Every structure is written in C-alpha cells, then in structure tokens.
Image (cartoon, rainbow, N blue to C red):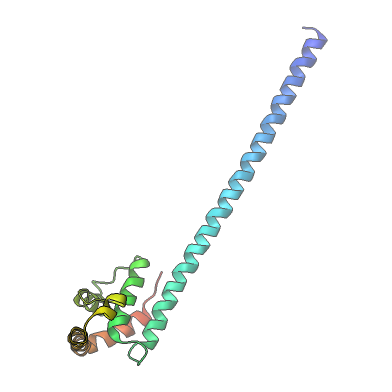
Length: 152
C-alpha cells in the first residue's frame, strides 16, 4: 500500500471519528435537554398537586362559615381529590364528601341555579340543609380526618 493511499484511509478514519464524536456530543445535549424538560414537568406536576392539596386544606378551614357551606365544600373537595387521583370513597370518615356529592348531583349549579324559579330554589335549599343536618357529625369527622391525611 502506498503512502498516499495510507494517508487517504487515515484521513477518512479521522473524519469518521470526528463525525462520530460530533454525533455523540449532539445526542448527549439532546438527552440533557430531554431530562431537563422531564424534571421541569415533574416539578410542575408536584407544584400543581401541592396547590390542590393546599386548596383542600383552605376549604376545610373555611367550611361551615357564612362564606362556604358543607355542600359546596364537599363538591369542591371531592373534585380536588379526583384531580389528585385520591379515591377515599371507602375511607370510613372521609367518605362523607363523596356521599354528599352523590346526593346533590341532581341539583343545578352556577347559571342553571340562577335560572331556577324561587320555589325550586327553596326546595333544593331545604334538601341541601337536610343533608347538612343529617350528615353533620360525619362531615366533622371527615374534616378532621382529611386535615390529618397524608397526601403522598
């Protein structure tokens, strides 16, 4: 093999090595970028999860006041628990929120509530009040249990 042929093969090998190194470096940068995006997504998920947990705790603190009744709090808490993928419907105490939400599902909310005639509103209000009285003790236990619940 002549010296010229040897140099051409050597230059081709060096070129292949250089392209390979560039490709490896490029892939490592892409992997690092993907990992950063994954970490950012996980952090965002954890932040959103914590916001929902904090919202539940705020609802539990304000429930029973003039600002928030048990029916509305139960519906909101159940919805937040669903968003957290926490199914506590079988929990002895916390199930009160699920029971109240299920019993009041047929009652119109928001704009539909505003469109209801006054007698219908009174009928539904009496029904909701009866649920609050009927489940008052269970709701208090649910409040205490959920305040102490460890969301993992």
